[in-house]
Structures are given as structure tokens and as C-alpha cells.
Length: 309
Image (cartoon, rainbow, N blue to C red; front, side, top):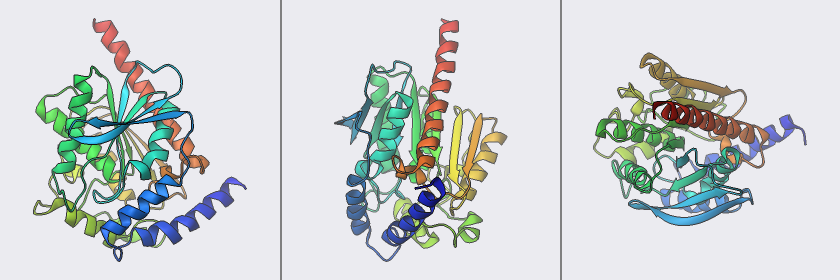
């Protein structure tokens, strides 16, 4: 099957399965169950070893690629799902492919979900996991996340900065949900072409996550935070998604804050297409670029540290 035909076929599959599955008519409990089953049925690289473990206050897993473990650094991965759905299972094709492509150990976190655990539960779990990795001797930690996990990774980096903790080495953000107030212009302009997400779904998840906290709180919607002093960031997004404007606005805000940022927008692709890793060549290519960014940033940081020693 040609690349274009495969892409169009997958777009149709996503529209017919994921869009209704993630729509506002299904209960959050049903969405969680269905996404978990879908994740279990997807392809995961065989040469990545997956081991359950605790990561601070929440469970998680270690994804270790075959071969000698890299000593350059590690990745802490935060899955997407609107802060209400998603799991280690649903996102393992992405996290495992990232481990394989980078050659780095990935730690994936099963943080607490809303509405049972609204903000700041997920953020507290992410910071706790980061602290645990620091305590274990990991001094070069890359933060990665997709969709809500991308927003959570950015909020985690801000929390680390404000707490005076060692910063992340880099941020790998896939279609980050930076504004849970859903004010992006592409909520309307991309509604007809986005095969996966809808504004009503995002608004329901956002309300469950923020509770009584304003949606423009800088740790719920980090697009509105003071972004100065953050590590290098790579942003990836599909062109055909309602969250595209979150990525574009974030790139502008990071540039204004003088944070090194790389933006990659993929024409004709949808939100979080990285989840089709192992099936969609574009997903494997995009994750490869994330891996390259992580390795190069870690190498530059390690070289600087050696010169300063």
C-alpha cells in the first residue's frame, strides 16, 4: 500500500473509531476502557523490554530498548488523553517507539486522572516521578508528552523551575494542549478536517480537570505562563487538528521568552498521529525526529558539563 493510500485509510479509521469513541456522548469510564483495549491491540516494538514499577507517588513502567543502556540521559513520558482518559497501554506504541528510536530508557507515568483526581493531582504525580528519577541518580532527564501529556510536561518543567529543582534537559511536546480554555482559532477552522477531536469533548475533559480552578491558570494552561528559563523545546503537530493553534501560539510564546524552540508541522496529518507508530511511516519518522532532538540536546548538555568540570 502506498504511503498516501495508507495515510488516507488510517485517517478514515481514526474518524470512524476514535472520534466517536472520544466524543462527549460516551462516559469517561467507557472511553478509558475502550482506549485501553485499543492500545493492547496495537503494535509495539518487540525489542523494547517493558517493566512495571512505581515512579514516585504513581505507578508507571520502564521501557528499555535492546542493547547497552545509554548513559546520556533518560526520558520521562506523560501520556495524553485530556487528563481524563488514556493510559500506559493506549500510549505504549508511542513510548516504546520513542525508546527504540532514541536508544534511551523511557519511564512512562500512569498519573492520576480527572474527574476523580482533578488538578493538581496529575502535576503532583509528574513532579514526584521526576524527583524519584533525580534521587535514583538520573541527572539528565528529558520530559516528553503528547496532547494533555504535552501540556502536563510543560507545566512540570515550570514547576521544577519555580521549585529550584534541576531542570529538564529538553522538552518533547507532541500537539500539546496548552490552553484548556479551548480558545484556539483552529477549534473552529479545523473542526471539519480534524478526524479525531472535537471542541465539546475537550471542553468536557477540561471542566473535569480544572474543577474550580480558572482555565487560564498557568499550570493548567501553560500557554499563559511565564516561559522564561525553560530548556530547549521541540513542538510537533498535525496540520489537520483543532489544537494546531495551541502549538503555533506556544511556539511564538517560547520564542518571545527566548527559549530555544523547534517547530515541526506535518501537512495532511491529524492530532497525535504518533499513536499509529509501527503502522504509519509518518509517525515513525516524526518520533525519529523527537529522538534525534533528545539525543543532540543531551549530547550538547553533557559536552558543556564536561568542559565545565
